[in-house]
Amino acid sequence: MVVRKVGKYEVGRTIGEGTFAKVKFAQNTETGESVAVKVLDRSTIIKHKMADQIKREISILKLVRHPYIVRLYEVIASRTKIYIILEFITGGELFDKIAHHGRLSEAEARKYFQQLIDGVDFCHSKGVYHRDLKPENLLLDSQGDLKISDFGLSALPEQGVSLLRTTCGTPNYVAPEVLAHKGYDGAVADVWSCGVILYVLMAGYLPFDDVDLTSLYSKIERAEFSCPSWFSVGAKSLIQKILDPNPQTRITIEQIRSDEWFKKSYAPVGLLDFEDVNLDDVNAVFDDPEEQRESDPCGNEDMGPLSLNAFDLIILSQGLNLATLFDRGKDAMKYQTRFVSQKPAKVVLSSMEVVAQSMGFKTHIRNYKMRVEGLSASKTAHFSVILEVYEVAPTFLMVDIQKTAGDAGEYLKFYKNFCSHLDDIIWKPPSESNKSKVTKTRSKKY
Image 1 (cartoon, rainbow, N blue to C red):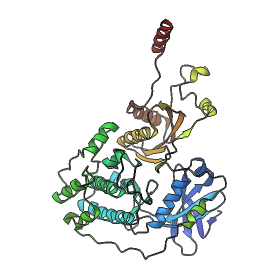
Image 2 (image 1 turned 90 degrees about the horizontal axis):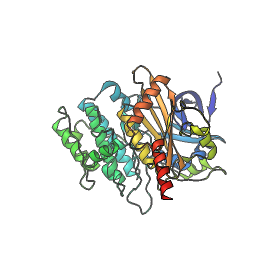
Image 3 (image 1 turned 90 degrees about the vertical axis):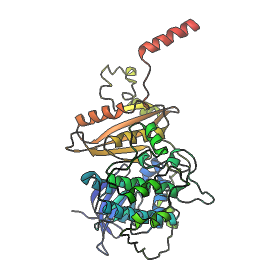
Image 4 (image 1 turned 135 degrees about the horizontal axis):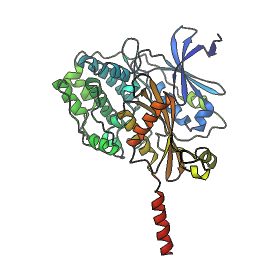
């Protein structure tokens, strides 16, 4: 077997695969330490205008060196690839622990919450706001300790800017002031997400959940939730202070640390040795004469979904219900796996995410592309799909849905169930009878 080498690392098997990257297991040949290598293709990054987002994520990981945050060791670049060398975490996601074992004991939930607060507080001390805190982005190491990951939607401070304005994150975990589309304090919004996570750890389900996005937002804005009977008085009191819909009166991290329930069995973690952080090399890694620098999807300027050209439309015409142009027949749409919407792209993505999560699936979003995965409806096999949002015209978006794992029968069941909850965003063309009426009316008028 040929062993591939990247710098001082021997790269082995693939241990994870996302929409835009593969994660491989590797070993440091000098120390023998196991690491994870995130492999990115340069041309894909440029094509999908992701360079600024990845630069920011690397910069943030360099800044936030903390025992409860996944560590970045270094970044290596070749002519065609970018290799991000990360700490190898073996314990999986905290989400999976809840999914497999149900709610955690109060003592265990408190331990993870204490570690989460330590890590998030350190991020804030460096001016970094995570903006997508949820159990799926919290990993567990071999010792069972928390590791905060996925800083893809995080914000770095800008000179003279105190409030953030971009609405991003996972709807069920997002603070009400973020949903209000007004300026918000990133640190205060992160505290809200930590409160939702604590609730999920102790209850085994979300405090705010609804298939209908409008109803979900309404519940979040009013902080409409109740604590289960097994929550202790101290836990209830702290959660109610965190899930305060008014960001001005919401409890702060400093106040959380002083809370009696929080302080029980709390052992502050020792910080890593001080190290100068140099961000000058981040841009150098991405230097490419063909690269056009564009803003990322969760920054100040949203580049929007990819546009489809005429050739793309012809290829996809069956899914867009233009089959009559090519006489494909009445059964052409029988297994349609695309739909059209006139809603804004972010609304479409958020709606799809809420529906997928309500169906029991995990979701991962990057640049108007969403991966949905979990167990099939029969609970016997892994199932996953990729949903990508394209712009067809200034007022029309197309969502393309592709199966990546699972059998066809399960996929068709998923597609039918999924779309049945998206009536508010799916555009339906007028019926032929309506078209006839419009034609007749116009004839009379003119």
